[in-house]
Amino acid sequence: MKTSYTRIEVRPMAGALGADIQGVDLARPLDDATFAEIERAFHDRLVLFFHDQRLTPEQHLAFSRRLGPLSRSPYIKHMDAYPDIIAVLKEADERNISTFGNAWHSDFSFLEEPPLGSVLYAREVPDHGGDTLFANMYDAYDALSEGMQSMLGDLNAMHSGRPYGVGGVSADLKVSRSIGIERNQAEADREVAHPVVRVHPATGRKALFVNSIYTTRFEGMTEAESRPLLDFLYAHAIRPEFTCRLRWRTNDLAIWDNRCAMHYAVNDYDGSRRLMHRTTIKGERPISARGRNA
Ligand SMILES: O=C(O)CCC(=O)C(=O)O
Image (tube, rainbow, N blue to C red; front, top):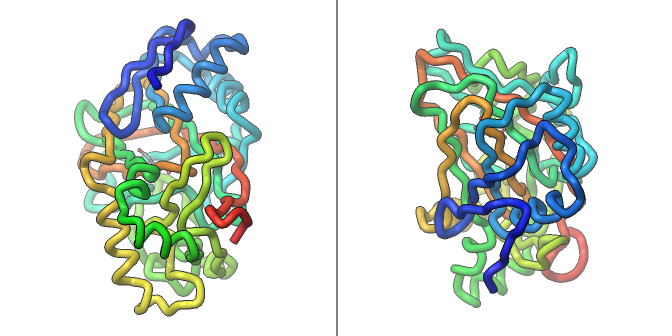
């Protein structure tokens, strides 16, 4: 069914997901009818992109809070003056180094209640490069065979914050120093179980919920046993047909739904400074297709 909008203009940016939103000034308080259309577009397109928004940190925070209570991400330094904002920064002189989010993931899926979504605001971006890719995890699930869907529907996967922990590969991963990641945190190594297929609380649709940064294995299986199927799912989930790409300009703002989309920050702008401000919206424990939590 085609959804119509009267308060905002919604221009899909790719077949699978993503939309440019026109006709909104996020610096002003939004009336309920306009916000309801933004929410509807968010559920329909998963990633919304607003251009040329002139926002103070307070206005960025106020819009974020319309989407839900904010959460603070463990292991990441928040801004001193704005403890609900992370500065996602890579300086021009940080060469041959990873960026924050430079692998496909759903934010902090290792939390018992992973974030609903994030609001990313571009303060300073390179002339070219530094795009963000997104993939639609409903489409990834829908495109699997019935046999695979049914098998995955019975599984939980373990997620861990190992990139921030002592035992994981990434204690020594070189990532931009500017983001302020706290590594070597023992509690990050613990695992949390989530359903492999989660049901979106607002749309009722099923989405694949595993990602290459935080998922370690299937519950009840070893990492070696899990690896082949996880690798298949990671490759399957990012088929070009399931993706869209945001090309940032300064003052653009994006919101994405972590429950049904993954994203990837492209690290192709050595020699340029890129500064984004991110807020994170609190989420809930993923609901499984079996009708109960993991
Ligand atoms: O900088 C970006 O484009 C995205 C960074 C990221 O992956 C995140 O904030 O979770």
